[in-house]
Length: 169
Figure 1 (cartoon, one colour):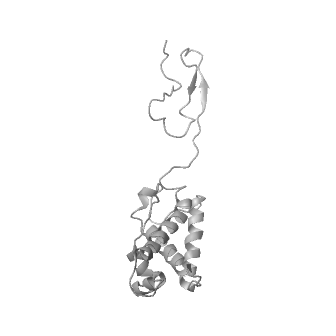
Figure 2 (cartoon, rainbow, N blue to C red):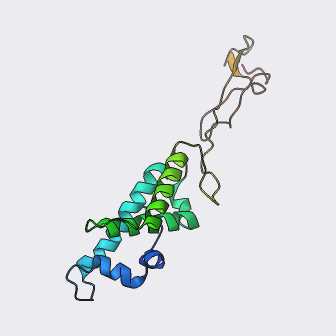
Figure 3 (cartoon, one colour):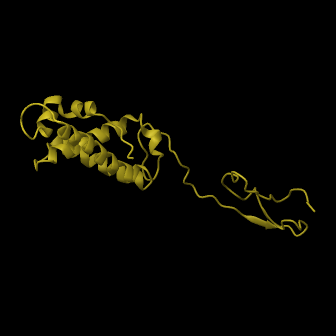
């Protein structure tokens, strides 16, 4: 299931409720059918998939549900999809917003920019482990030199034999 960030009301706040109705009302009766309501849900999902493909490389998507930029970006991309649905051109303001959103999402995906008002989910800095031979330690003669290594200790049941520690027989 795709993580989405906006609602129908968020799209309506960008293009207005009457405009939203006119974009999905294919039979022009002024009333939404279930199929016409599905157009909005599908647009939200497709817009979120587009965002998630880039943003998901740097952030845990479930942590972004309250991020204001993600909500606005999802709603803007969904509005653009609904506007283009019948082959109509996008208004210049929406087209410019879509361009900015796509550029920032690409930059975030490559790790060159960060999501506005969101702490990073991952530490992508390289971890280096340097080893030191200690022949007196017959149990584990090659041990990790903590003064020259970076990164966190392993988690779970993995063991790390540190240099300079006691000799175990």
